[in-house]
Image 1 (tube, rainbow, N blue to C red):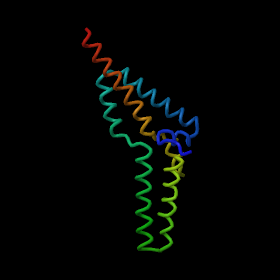
Image 2: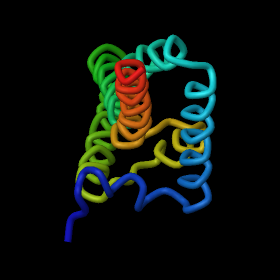
Image 3: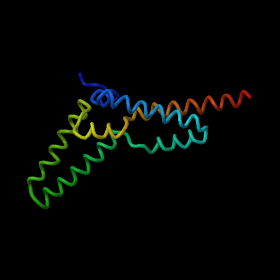
Image 4: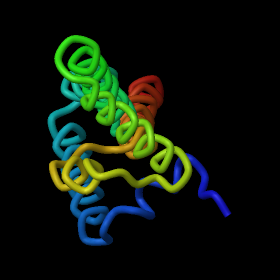
Length: 137
């Protein structure tokens, strides 16, 4: 069975790396909560600009495919193998959630959209609770 989009990258990532990413997210949430509403809003802005693993993989693959195609067209036909291999890895990632750069990117802390959204939701809840508390006073 093909895993869901939300599950596929964490399933293909080592448990200790998933745990590292989760802990880093928890630390980021705690830091923003401790700093107050202004820091929370600033962090939410940063999260809006953060690239998730899918976007980063797609950008890197597209760049490599374009370079491989240009080299194949202008230097040597054998370079056309580069886009073919990358396309195969993209297909494998779409189906299984794994491709060669994934372990490296995950170890560097690149998160899934779901992991980013988890932090965003926690910070938004804190802002909403702060607004409710201010109204009650």
